[in-house]
Length: 262
Image 1 (tube, rainbow, N blue to C red):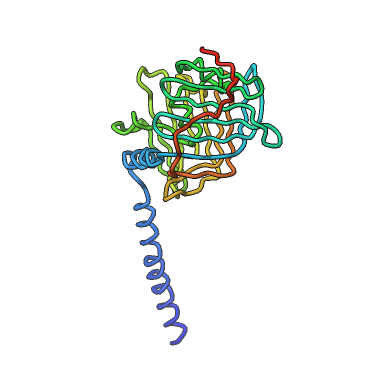
Image 2 (cartoon, rainbow, N blue to C red):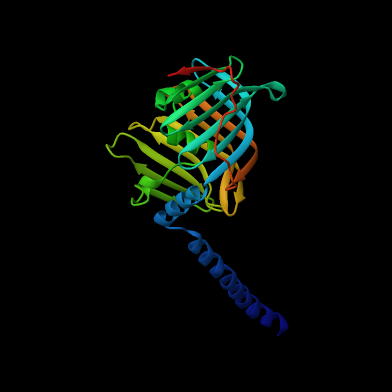
């Protein structure tokens, strides 16, 4: 009698426990899937929450005509100004630059020369040795991508996995495609790719060692590769401060500085 009761009760108990445990898990997974429009708004919203940015670390630049690694400090005041200082061994000042959308100043400490003039993509290439627009420069140093033009668009492809969201957009003109991989846990951007019509990579950015600043994910390591141009910009931060007061960005110049207008 006892064995018969066990044979009857045990399967029923097991079935009840399975249904009890399985139902909440399925519901939780379903609730975790974020619609594409909400996801893009969240990521872009996080980018816009960063008003000021200060960081120190190591910068590495590789291109066909330049290769070098140095310590650096960046001060960023969105949306219109950035200061980057480059230091050599033992903290020796090498160069300081302030760039806005309208103009720039670049001080070569070793040669005591101040270069200044109107900002342009060509000027930025001369200063930073890679092809960066001003907006690209801001995003690269703050570890983000501007998604404003995606806010009112549905992705052409959307994959929602347990650990990763993947969004793909065919860009206007149909020649290029943008792909974004987003961490499902903290909604941090893990990588961004720009592909041509044959799915060959034009640009690839990866973001690692993410930490939260007031719930905004910020990467301590950013790697940007311009595949076709054979260029690479890598940033590894030691310290980061977000939304702290930053005074007006200025350069300390000696009285005998040689000023050169570009």
